[in-house]
Image 1: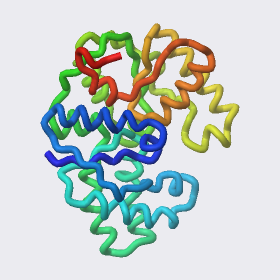
Image 2: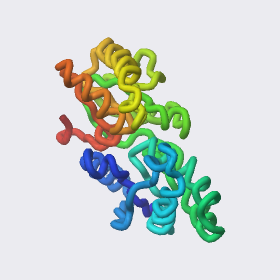
Image 3: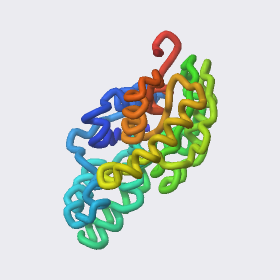
Image 4: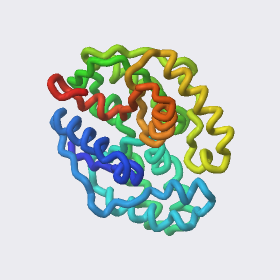
Length: 246
C-alpha cells in the first residue's frame, strides 16, 4: 500500500522521532511510506479558536498535497480528527464546489495510526518487542471524536515482553486541550494532577498515548515531580523490536 505520512506540526517540530517510528513500523509491514514535502498545518488551531475562514488555505493545501494516496496516516488523533471532522465544514462554508469535492475524496483516506493498522491493514501483532511496564492514556480526540476504542490496546496487548497495566479513570481528560491549558491554567493543572496520580498508581515505567501533545502535558508534570515515569507515543512502542528497544 502507498501511504502518505501526515506528520502534523507538533510532531514535526517537537517529536520528529514519532514520524520516524511510524515510517519504520509501516515499512517493516511491507508498505511504502512517502512524506509529501508540501504539507503544512491542518488548520486545527485556527478552527478551534474561531478563525475558521483563515483555515481555508490550509484545508485547500491538505486536499492538494494528500490527493491520490491509498491512505494517509497521522500519528495524532487530534489532527486526524480535525481533517475528518472539520475539513468538510470549512470547505463547504468558505470554499467552492471544486474544493468540497477534493476534500470529499481525501478525507476518507485519512486515518489515525491505530485505525490504519487494525481496520485497514488488518493487523494487531506488528512484531514489536518492549519489555517494560506500560500504561495507556486514551486522548480525548481519539476517544471521543474518532472513537478508536480499544484499537491501541489491541496493538499493545500483542507486543512481546510488555507488562500492560490499566490506567485508573483512563477516559478522563489530562487537562491539556491546546489553548485550554493556557486560558484555564488552574483547572488544567487540577486535571493534570489527577491524571498524574493515576499514572503513578499503576507503577508503570512508561505512559503511552496516541497524541504527543497530551504526552508533553502529562510528561512535563511527571518530570517536574521527578517521578521517573517516561512518556512514549504508541508508534514508538510498536516500532520497537528485540535488540532495538529502550
